[in-house]
Length: 541
Image 1: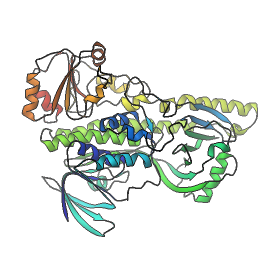
Image 2 (image 1 turned 90 degrees about the vertical axis):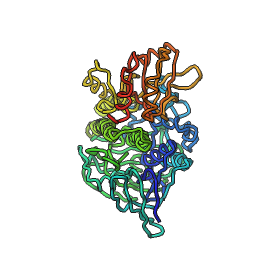
Image 3 (image 1 turned 30 degrees about the vertical axis):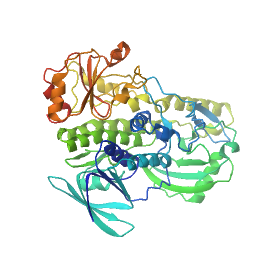
Image 4 (image 1 turned 30 degrees about the horizontal axis):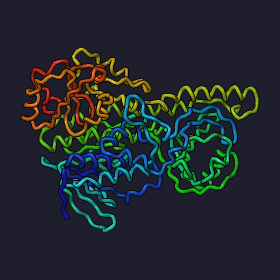
């Protein structure tokens, strides 16, 4: 059997499914192969970040996410304590999903939707696209590149046979131990292994009735050496994920050991059913580059990060959205080869940003040290608990309130973004260090800001298919730009907006926005050489 497709995607996790779905949404033919059957026995993520939800809005998936089985009334507080029958050191109150509302900067809000619920939403989206085929229990064996494309050998694990796939592009969204990345010889660099951690999913329907603490999403257990374990509400009902943070010693905790740890965290034995156990290595690593030519990588294949921040999967979805429109442009003939270079140039700094941030959160958790007095019913013990609780409360606000980490990623080193000539890009890089305070801006490379239009749509609803020129001046002399796009085959829509508040938010008379919703160029005058501008932003120059 020989198959042909535009893009072969290796890996059927959330990033691979998002990439396949978005390419299909753009009318491309995609074959996705995934070596597992797609079932999730250990949800690796449970936060769908606000930027990812904006993409879900684009794809028409918001309602599907909101209807997943997570209890939308369950409180989302982060609580730090010695044990569930011990001392509560503090908490960060957070609203339930039903109570939460979008911030002014977005039409969406983050959602609690673990991977075992989110993957089926993305899978249904991908399957709904006419050009997308999903092949589970299929694995990549090898691939050979040539000038026109890639020939890949795929093994069907159920039928015990191989077949070939001919594609114009191949993307490895195949996880931390990526076969595609290894075949390309791409190295990963960074701090490496941070801890050897063990996750255990257990079932206990009356978990919160067995202790005296107000319920929350994440219980963070603090000992003399800082936070050493967590329990999070997987579905807001009866499933819980216990994580033993661990250290540099690689240990294999068995079911009995993990059960005893659960008893210690509760403060007493209680009935639980151990559902699954997963030992894993927490790491900080970023790939040297994200591929070249016709073979690329995406998601965890590009970056490994501590989950202390909820940014791993969400960053991978951002990779997929960035890469998808560029592959569409290349397949459509209106994109140039510099788009491939821009993929690494844009997304690698984001990976460095999120991995460093996430490791910093882990260090705050582990650095909240006291000594054994934290358990004592004494003035010394009380003072230690106040100090540690304050340190965690102050230090982890950057994780809990990290809007700028999700919305503030800006492409400052891209060869396909035309920056304002007067801007100091080094100063702009320094702004990336702020995790909390997102400042909407139409500066080139930034996410185009959200504002509500008079017809009830968000400005974000204008973006996705092709380039969009926002005209805040009401100028009718667009013909040069239109002609340049028509000559190059570039999809362009011109949207006049006669709203002074939105014009002030966007700061320039003309703002050109890419299909991924990032600003490509802005100015108070139309370009004097529109063909050169289009050539640059489409990667041909």
